[in-house]
Image (cartoon, rainbow, N blue to C red; front, side, top):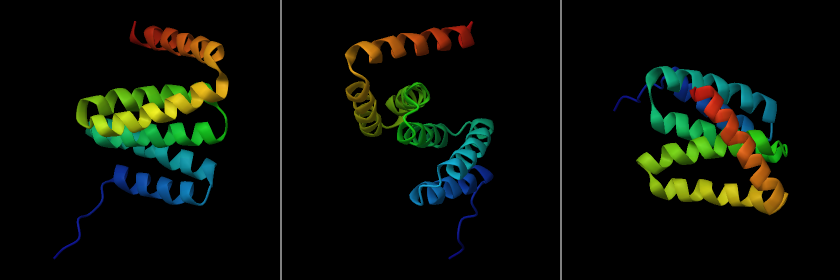
Length: 122
């Protein structure tokens, strides 16, 4: 049986996974950003969602809460469309940020992110 050839997005995603396992966050972030470009061109929602989620994990590990929360929210919204169980797992990571920041700071950050997303849409 012939092994399926990976797309450029899948190859970059795999590279990101390997770097993330080794806690090489900069390398993982670069690889995931490349994967995101490819998955977006391919309109691969599962790939986009998974990549955004992993970028969120990287930012979360770095305590870059704004970036982490933005990535998690986008990933969650994609997963609600294709796999609600995964969306629930992402929601758990969002709650971890809320716990880390506290209710007030979390709500401020959430408003900031929503405001930024509205600007991009308009």
